[in-house]
Each structure stands twice: as C-alpha cells, then as structure tokens.
Image (cartoon, rainbow, N blue to C red):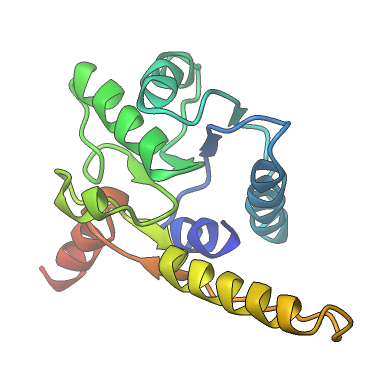
Length: 175
C-alpha cells in the first residue's frame, strides 16, 4: 500500500482516500499503516478512510459519501481489486471515469484487473508463489518438527495501468 500511495503522490494527488476493508482483518491494519506512513512522509493527513465490505458492492456504496464531500479525493486507493471494481462502477454512475477524472487503484492483481475498462492499476502479491512457499515450509516442518522457524517474505509489485491516470500524465508530458 505504501508503494501505490507513493505512486499516486508522484502523480500529484494530495487528497487520497483509502477505501475498503474492516478493522477485524489483519491485512486491513497493515495496508492502512502503509497508506498513512506514505502520506505522513509528505506532510499529509491520512483522514480519508472509508471502511466497507471488501466487495464490489462495498466499493460502489463508498463512492457517494466520498464524492459528496466539500473537498472530495482526487484518488481512491482500494483495499483490494474487488473494491476498486465497485468504485469504478460508482464513479461511472456519476458520469466520472477512473484514470481520467479520478485515480483508482486496487490490490491483488486479479486476472480481471488487466481486462477491466479502464485496466486497473494494482499491486501484485504473487498469490501462487505464496501458496507454493507455504506448502514447502509446511512439508519441511512436518519432516522436521523441531527445525528452526523459517520466514519467507515475497516482494509486492506495482502494476501500473490506465485507472490511476499515469498513462494520461505521460501523454500530457509528451504533447
């Protein structure tokens, strides 16, 4: 989340909302911490946080309250890709388009992210590799229950597509 927040800041966004997730999920806490850390480094307050179900419907329903603010966000960083798809639907219902009128990003890099219109900027978490490594660690633990604890951390990767507006910013620079 820190990486994608920094990306949005580099694109010039200063009113960034964090949309989706709930307090009971550990991933929500971690993602919110990364979001807040990046904003604070730039002297910004991470005050635009909307908790909602991590679903399309949750994202869709979150758009109205955010866009009705006196000073609405220029970017919405979503808890996951499903929430981002819902946010894009909510924006479209208001005559707005992700990547043109407001930046939208997701998290997970679901296969649908590349096929959505606009294609969704997201964070790839290598879910298949995580599963393979977890299985390998489990098999080693079964073979040697007293073995030293192991920890594997796989890097996340920012996948920049149309929904964040970066492609548009690059076109504007070249014109």
